[in-house]
Length: 217
Figure 1 (cartoon, helix red, strand yellow):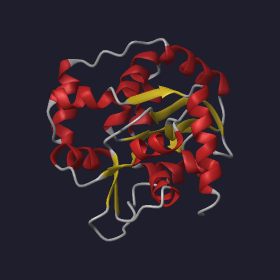
Figure 2 (tube, rainbow, N blue to C red; figure 1 turned 45 degrees about the horizontal axis):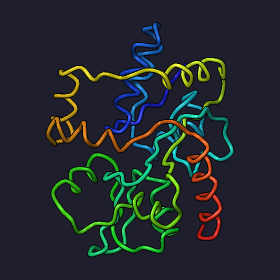
Figure 3 (cartoon, rainbow, N blue to C red; figure 1 turned 30 degrees about the vertical axis):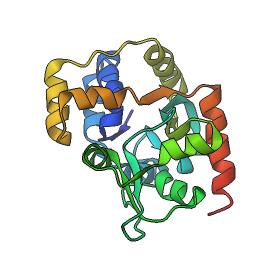
Figure 4 (cartoon, one colour; figure 1 turned 120 degrees about the horizontal axis):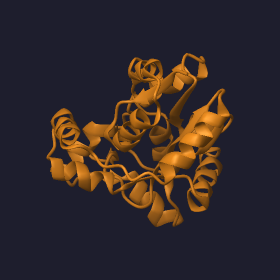
């Protein structure tokens, strides 16, 4: 079981959970050695270099998935467009680059931890998840947990993560804050914006995105 790991703060609670949930040290090592940004994880998943991963929503439609994702119910602060800058896609992204077109925006796209750092220091940006919610009254799903095989394992992960209360140890909180370049309190506030439950409203948001994306791709 090779798991593709996105190295963004938004998945810190899941990474803590999975290390406690999975007992095999070999699986843990596999997860640690398949780390990258979303666009690269998407590619590794399509090439079957990893068995499962949170892959970008725009790439996930044709793959099997469980009801876990990276979801913003309203704002997210880590997926932005900066209108004052020239049009530029984020090479780390797939879904967000399409979302900008769906929303009819222009500017530079920023995602992930660098976007969060920017949002905490500036106010000249548009939060894409917030604008999506204002326009369609639905959550936005940035990624879903897709898999190629071992469905029973991922169903079990889905079931257990859904009822697991993740507590972030202080040493990991301090490391995350240092790695991202923000305060510990800002890490915790940011994580409150992230949901992982691909419930009915989130699924409706995902289907709405697919419908709107088909118009601009």
